[in-house]
Image (cartoon, rainbow, N blue to C red; front, side):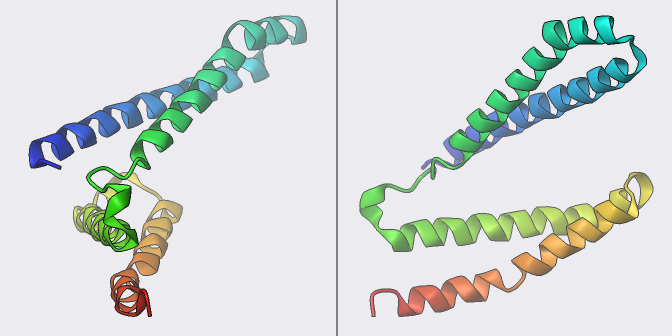
Length: 142
């Protein structure tokens, strides 16, 4: 896959992710409104707004997930090694992104302890995967 195509694909995914975030905020806001309304009005709002937005959010998440999992740049004929190599590359990139995020101090400035702990946990889980992938590939087909 050409580098420009990979960048365009990532830009598309990032844009869809922004829309997912916005719809998630809308669902939360509508949930807050629901709690403040009388039962009849809340039910009307739920039918007119909440359920359709929640449905759209679910559909967009599935769309995002399907497109993101489409294994860009790897053809099935390339075999499992190519898929594992691609996964290893993207795991390393995710770890780098999270590392840079942690180094930016943004999680400390605008995050909370749970976010920081979650990021650290994910990075801890990603850390040994490069070696695990290499080990797996060395023994693949034996």
